[in-house]
Amino acid sequence: MAGRPTKYQKAKTIRKVETLISAMTAERFFDFCSVDHIAYALGVCRDTIYEWQANHPEFSDIIKAWEAKRNVLFFKLVVSPQVKPALWIWLSKQWLGMKDYIDTAHSGELGIKPLQIIVTTDGNKPDSSA
Image (cartoon, rainbow, N blue to C red; front, side, top):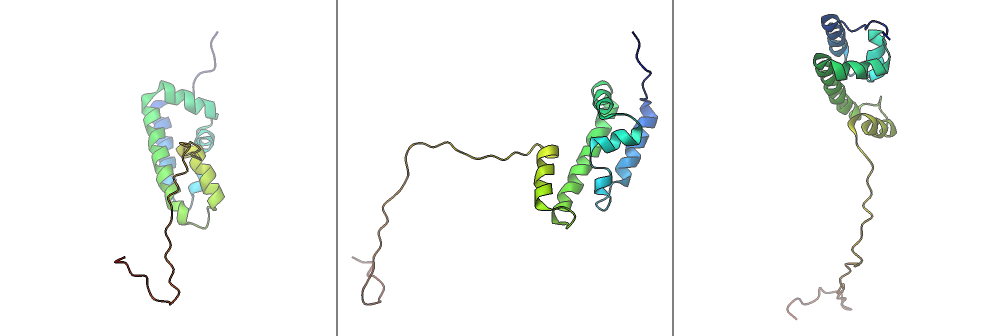
């Protein structure tokens, strides 16, 4: 059973993605920031992008170049008023694989050491030679 012919045309497809990478700027970051944007520009669905990455090493390389530029621009946007902290955190988790991590391991010991407080009643510093 044969499927539809592929839309993948090695040189033409690579050039289209290179054009998108060239157009990526901090000002237009959100126009090119997701795989869906690349898929839309190429006239395919997101799954096709992943399939092409798996089957065509040259396409995989150009998508890695796109991801690298996206990530660099993303970090530049941290100081931009365009990106609110909650959005930056969410995108970091989605794109960069960052996670929230809470260390709940405990040894069982409290690690509290006694605190020695010296208070004088006359307002002078305590004598450290004693």
